[in-house]
Length: 70
Image 1: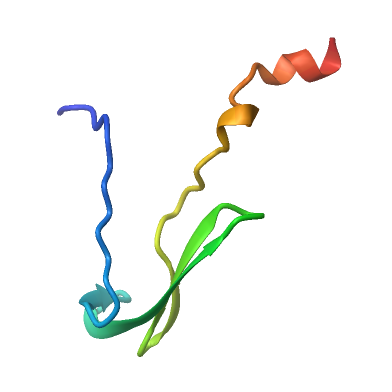
Image 2: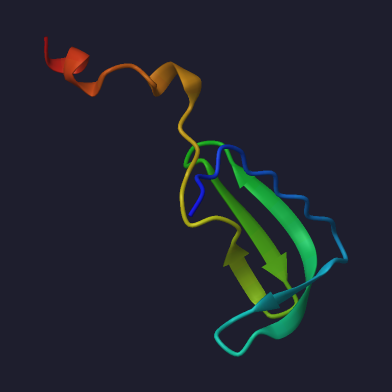
């Protein structure tokens, strides 16, 4: 098993993706980035979906969390 070092996600409006447990096709209608929460949401013809199950942390928050209490 190898370790993934970089992830690139190329999505376009009108692109068909598979969603849900039964892998039904859905077309992307809107892509939104929520700056406050860091989430990326994809609106599809079958409803809104989260693009990722994790969030990207802003660079300024990469410090040691213990520094907050020192």
